[in-house]
Length: 297
Image (cartoon, rainbow, N blue to C red):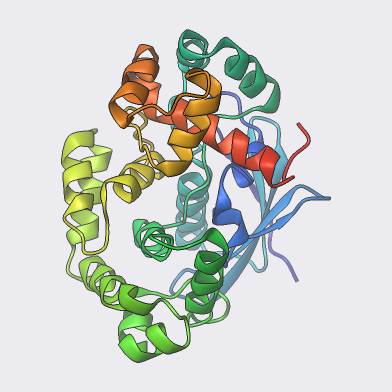
């Protein structure tokens, strides 16, 4: 039996489908995307037992149907996690103009599609673990590893830091098949428990993007590209994350087939100002979506 539903408003225009499939997180547990019904499913552990959430489009935000009745504290926590996952609180005022300044065609595309926000985990810990899993591997292999890690959690929720520490390095290497990344994942779990990740989130809430980036880089297994991507998931959109996929898209889209350097890409998107990182991310993501057949839009 489901409990009473609730709505979480978005700051500004919002399209659930565009956020849900913005990048590959939706392919990883505990997310599950119902493309036909345009519903995002997710199981959360609120500390008082598992909670299945079904998120669907609602006027001005997202409607959430929980699998059971919630206390006031549970409802507040569920709301907070939904806001983080769907970036409902981020301020995108000026984003359309920023894209227009760099690439008018992309601006028209994103305006029609509803692109802007990107899907995040319900915690920084989840995003860090998934980011580590996606380093120096194919995305298909990363998805398989992430889903095996997710299976170490309780009741289909993403595992807590303590869950992964209890599992230990060998299951991460042999069962989740993360190989050399296992120590970095356990280091992330310890960083969540000792307050390091909480400190990063506090700096993020204070708007200190440079300090957040430096702190992410200090985490074991997190390089510049992954740190830049996690910044986007935390709602910081200025610093671009430029990797091989970005270079490939920029070559075709902005440099007439000539391979640019990362510095040239950064200069090309500089007119986007505080949205430079988000603009280049969406240029790359739209290319990925179309190449994989994920969207016809």
